[in-house]
Length: 293
Length: 239
Image (tube, rainbow over all chains, first blue to last red; front, side):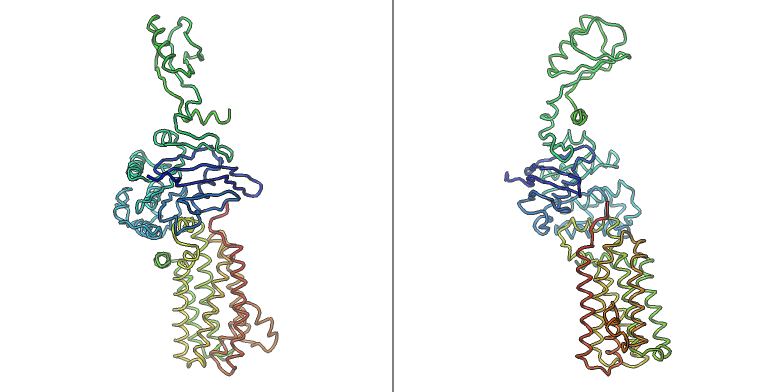
């Protein structure tokens, strides 16, 4: 497989009037990877994505998609599918007509009925877009993005407003595309999705890339956590912990296995019950919470 | 482009409001003028009737419909969606506007043919075709520029008024009073020169070379409108 990046962003700047939305941002997305661009609200990720998708021109810096400018629609668009954050379908067209129209305009070929089946909209094919629920519109959007099995797929908050079955179906389709080597760029507010699926994460904050790396690279910068509750007074704990008034205990640890072993040994020796015991590495949520602290 | 055009045509026929303003009203007004052609020929001339039906269809059927369509497609982000495909901007606009342009040309042709049948053929059909095409081009240009100033389809009801009423007023002013007085003013305002050209083509009696000079102001408005449109036109709603 080629190792030339699918997306190259170099020193990207984007300003709206006085507001500097994106500052000197550089990153690349490699073939076949799922890159999650995450960030706090207003971090600049949608602006960045819009430049990479070709909807917005950068104030300065260069962006290449498959080695072309994103403006070069004829070269770039047939190879990429875009799921926008907001819908953008004509309310008077039916579901089938919408998929057919946008699909044809991508210059890829596919079977409309097959795509409708993938997103479970076959039963809604003849309905007007104005009659769809919010979740059905998201699935319609996803259908136009995966029409013709593109090599690169942009998913801007793909599962917002979807029930759990639809979410699973979306990810099953994405997984199939990935098996065929597709590259995925994802933004989402569901950090679990990113944590489970992303090969690499770019964490944006105030227009810059605050952190970048694999999930474990990001979470290893923060301690793991052991939580449990104590019902009765106990001998002094063997390690540093924060105990609240209800007896809930939180232990932060950079050596989770060793500290957990110590704790369990102590509990065994003193016949202490550790209720609701949970231990794990830092979650992405905590990495997010740590941004501002 | 043709994929977009055919989907637009479907949408026009599904949306009753657009169908009424773009097809029924201009057709009804035009039918009235054709039926009452003797009265209006006395007031102005047969050429005046040709000009007023041309501008009625071009103002309501083409211009106002095009502005409303573009504002509506922008507001619901359909334009952004189209721009996320491989289609270029020119192809997108052409596809969106093609159905209403074709409907306009068909309507104008049908109505002027009806007028010719009941009142007699125009003196110079070729010149009439030129006048119609120049008018259509001008109204498309003005529609693109106006669409840039229009935030929503509802807003279009206000933003299209100056041009729709203006060109129809010009057609009547020039058609009834001629261009003996205030000739320059009448020819320079949008629609004035096109009205005079249409009247010359229908009534005859004016040298074709003189008539063709009247194309200049109309094409000038096309240039002005397109220049404005390139500055004003937006593909996404204001945030």
